[in-house]
Length: 338
Image (cartoon, rainbow, N blue to C red; front, side, top):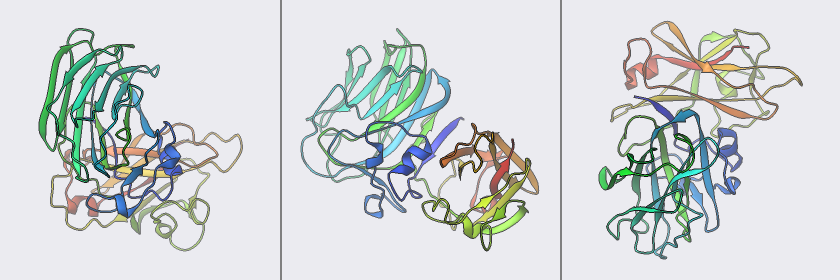
């Protein structure tokens, strides 16, 4: 398994959150996070009827990528096809589109390669208005044995094999989702994986609610967890800080009942550098069963706030699946590594 990234959008409170999370794209600051756009819980996001898209860079290059996201079209207006505005896109490390996936006026799924060659068309009337759908897509890049698979609500609607899916290099380095052209589109529960589909998933967000074993970082005021528990970071209003390499801070989380299988846990640390010229990096911290486990190191922390995301698909203590009991017994936080 290789879960690369998840986003439930529950911790967003303005459009800038998307850029701080690592997204690029056209008009991403027009993301409108709100409980109005949620699917089951928390928040979702709204892309309005103009050119808006979100592109997420991958940590390295891959020949195959799987992605999924919940989508709801807000009206019954017929979608408008535009070659420049795919609903899903897979791009190489130079930003060249390898495969693009669209919805047409007939509410069918169509797939093109980067050269504009039609690779396949689904049945019509698959994308109704005002209904949440969970849409997943796989792209494997190759000039003769390429693969594209599209699933809706766990049902395969396209399976294209032995296709030319290579237009740039042999890799995928970025994925994209965008509004269905001409229609306000709502999104929730986004994932990217390098090896498998996960089906219709829900992404739940939890905030720190206790200070735990490691308390090296200094709170701006009060308890440490209360400085980092806002739904949507409040930046410099309250925070924890450190200038000492190896300092760690860990927090407890309460999830409540988790009825379904836990695919993975993602930790989101929102940080900035306080001193000009300082070279600082951080690692995500997971403490399970009394042992500390660190994620890979972040890029250098900048003067502006950015997220560093770390994923543990399995409990690192026993290499078994997470459960509510395990997550609530574990601690998560931050390590100042450089």
